[in-house]
Length: 147
Image (cartoon, rainbow, N blue to C red; front, side):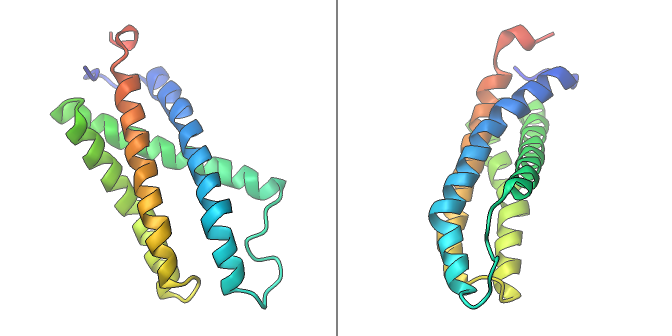
């Protein structure tokens, strides 16, 4: 059961735990699928899609913010309609549409990536968001946090 009152401690703990999954998924997708294609797309440009410590720091912040949005959207939906598979699917899909679809379609539309990369990045990122919402569901169902 989702608390009717927002519990910031619970939210932070759930966000940090789910962000482990999101970070692993983002790194896996980027290094195996995105980076090679982006480098190939910009083969005449140096420094494109490179990674260093500062980029990883920014990436970690981005993933944590993304996770916080996912967990918050899940909490809102589950509070109103119950902690169930529909809450997982709706919240995961909503965040995916709001973040990943807009980002990748905009990049391809501006000529910053190929349209074909969407066939890889969008399904993998949808899986990432659904699993993240499912993890949120399981973590929010732990009774010791209910007050």
